[in-house]
Amino acid sequence: MLDFETTGLSPNYGDRAIEIGAVLIENNEIVDRFQSLMNPGRKVSRFIEEYTGITNRMLSDAPSVAEVMDRFASFMAQHHLVAHNAGFDSRFLDMELQRINRQRRQEFACSMLISRRLYPESPGHSLEKLVRYKNLKTDGVHHRALADAEMTGHLWMEMINDLKAGYKLENVSFELMQQLSRVSRAAAPAFLQRAAGKQKP
DNA sequence: TGCCAGGCCCTCTTTAGGGCCTT
Image (cartoon, rainbow, N blue to C red; front, side):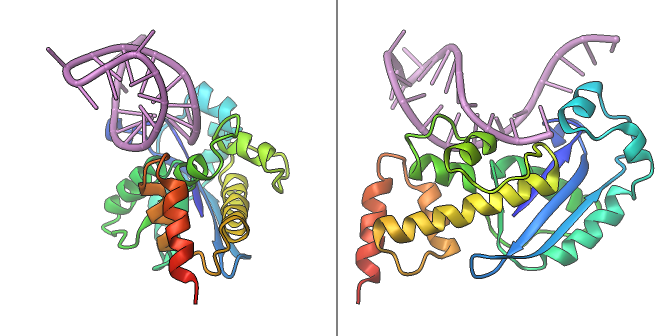
């Protein structure tokens, strides 16, 4: 599970990463963590300072983006990747890796797309609203990379548990989650019924 | 200086528009 804080929304228009947080999940348990600020080599806006709590002063002492991303590439290794609204984080990850001549090879899954299919009745599908809706573990910090990655991890594990309980699935693989995120919202229940049928002995 | 996203998903749809979600 990974999360970026950035200078803005568009890597194609020059925005850069300023913090990355990630948790490694094995057997429905957080077993490792990664977090670092990174100096993008430019000032961040007042809006970003207030939105994230990450100030220009904090970034001036931080290691370079290249240095942090090199360490993170080793941390993520070949593990599957998950982010909340993964399109956003995958664009920044791929752009920052490209800048250090490295490349992502593994697949991404999006916890937001899956939550929309699994919890259509939720009042919203932002990370914050889902944490409240599912009463997930949180330390109350939002818009910081490690805290958001941890909450995404708890959401991911909750969704797996709900799929197991609600559809009598014995095994919920990363691939099944990815497939779920790709079927239409209307077709999701039938897709899950079929998946459960296939797993019956 | 101020401007600039991208994709999903619904609906009053498909020759489109707008809300949501990420910073």
